[in-house]
Length: 469
Ligand code: 9MR
Image: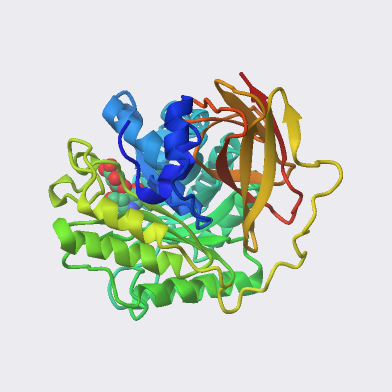
């Protein structure tokens, strides 16, 4: 067994088998807030996700899929859900590669970001040659069909990607879609909302990181206008492709905070930073800290797993080297996540209208006993849209393993987990958590795992059970 980080040891010690080992290690202090030993665990303890882009044809590479499964809990299809992939001929949809990624993600207890419904780039040939009303209708049909196919399975959709021009104009990018009329973006958002009401709907772009840039201001003004007119937008994605010519700006937190203050979530959606060593590590740290300083910055996605998987492989912009080793940038991201995030609501974000209950409702009274272990639920941090919970498993007799179910009630959704291996039932409401290690506990010993629930206004405590083996 490799030595886990100090703050992690007590928790893992409780889950390792054998009385002698347990007796030895249990004497180590167990801190109140344990550090995460993976990116997803560390991010989840701040109420955020940590994701990566996945290429379907790399999933058979076990180094790749092992890292992806261990470190990330939000998955974006790097190319497989784009317009050219999903509608290669007009009205003939092909979801095979996109579905592969979604099913891998769901089998492994991960959420999915959808990317991207409408974009001037990576259009199928038939669409590139269209214009006017025919193109507008084809675009809306595409949005409706694809969002309907993936309905209920997508955490957030990039509904429209990269619609603003680079440079100083602050205006829209010219494209065949833009030429169908300035309202094409809001039309796409309305179609997406109708097709999948549960997905968060995002506008996603690059070079929108520096608050003083015209492009950033252009997108900001559009989002403000959409919010004031009731256009259904929930989030803004910041791609965050950085390099020496486009470094992480010192006002990044200002940008994220100002967008969040419009009443949208912000997400870092395609992060990569060209470079190496401590300079790269420091820039990664800055991005993570900026996100953690904004309560509505709900997650970070890096654009690939290893440097060799990157669209900019020669710039070595990711967190793992070509052999799958953790880079200095990985460690700085993990440490920044473990240093924790803000619990203060963003300036203009109102507090939750329904105060969270301090006692569980009678219909789901924790703890629940099953076999010779007991599962006890305890509340963690709460935010306007989500809360954390911990389940403590206590062995009533010596046990060689355990499994625990956590049942949430619709419209709640579990959006992140840590310190265990989750599987899900088909409804997505029942998670079965098993220990990552052996799960053996002697009588009186405990182990725990945690999760984040997006509550959608329902603060009911999850129901928990424990089954021993
Ligand atoms: O990483 C993607 C690469 O494999 C594709 O060849 C490329 C084609 O446009 O798209 C890359 O992903 C882009 C993403 O979809 C939108 N933002 C910029 C990303 C990097 O180009």
